[in-house]
Length: 248
Image 1: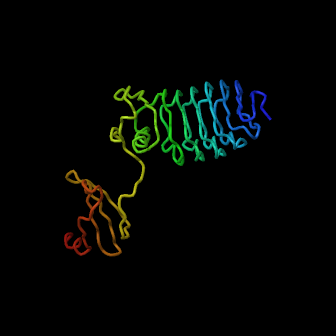
Image 2: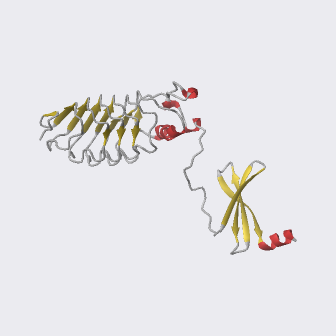
């Protein structure tokens, strides 16, 4: 049945000035809109009971956050418009499960950044609209710049709101190298086919070295960072006998 705060036709529903997201809609509803509603978030699994939706729209609402798995259970959703709201934060997993989504709009909200890999798993996506937000072009947004550079998805022109050095710059024209960031992400550089109980890194003469202690075979292995190949290469091996002689 149609919620009291909504008007419904055979396959459309419009909810205005509702204080929460209703849980019951006619089973054949494929288009659902929320306008000027009073809820302050989109909770987890808010639309689990409306699996037939193809279009979902939020405009001129007061909510400021989208929770994890907010749209779980919508396998047929193709168009998601979340525009002219007050959104400040989005869970990294807010759009999980939206494998059929073609068009996503987060335009004209209060977003300063987006969580890394927000669009992961959205294989059908062809258009993303992020206009009208207050993006801070810092290291938190570096992933988005890199994604925009490599993706085939169409992204409307968006601009930096800060910091001062980037004020007004078009984000679409930036590259990942524009950001001087120290990352805490781990990535595999090289696999070594020996066991070591100790690894020490040190710098000398402007170069980076790593030494691996291998007491089970009586050897220490030194590796040097190759700035051309961008990997560590073997430099030298010192045996326990050599160490003993040098100590004497």
